[in-house]
Image (cartoon, rainbow, N blue to C red; front, top):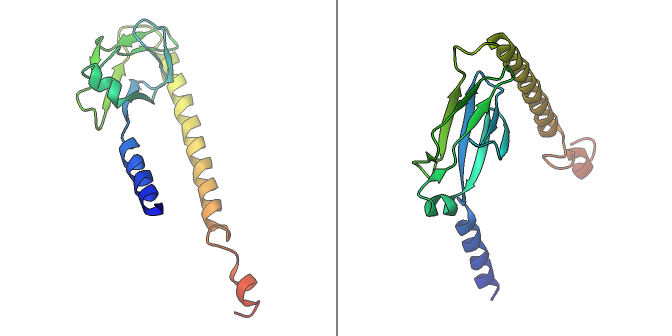
Amino acid sequence: MQRIRSLLLIGAAVLLTGCSTYVKVVSDPEGATITTPDGSVVYGIAPLDVEYKTSDLERDLGRIPGFRAHWPSGAEASTESPFVVQDLRYGAQVTLKRPKDHPGLEEDLKFALERAQLRAKEAEAEAERMRLYLDDGWFWGPPRFWLYGPYF
């Protein structure tokens, strides 16, 4: 009975993996606010990943509403709507480029630089946190002298 229960749990775990498809949305320059084309859903500030249920994409033949990018200067760019995700297993990447003829490029570049610096600081903090975690003796178990004495 225990073996059957274990097999059922493993089977459920296998079936539940891969239930999501991700679309990576990038703006050039980075830092644009990403929404649906009608603005009804705000996903966040690019770069970001948007998660969709794979079963929903299969039902809708990979069609999603698409994306619109809004930069601080007021510039906007959008994808076609609906946008079709071709590969439901690996997802897609969308790059929204800022229109070159729109004024306020300096403002958008300044904001992109600030965002990039913030992300770099966050990455450094995460790397330091992981270094401390991995260097801590508790990650590898209690210190050896606790188990074998101070002269081991």
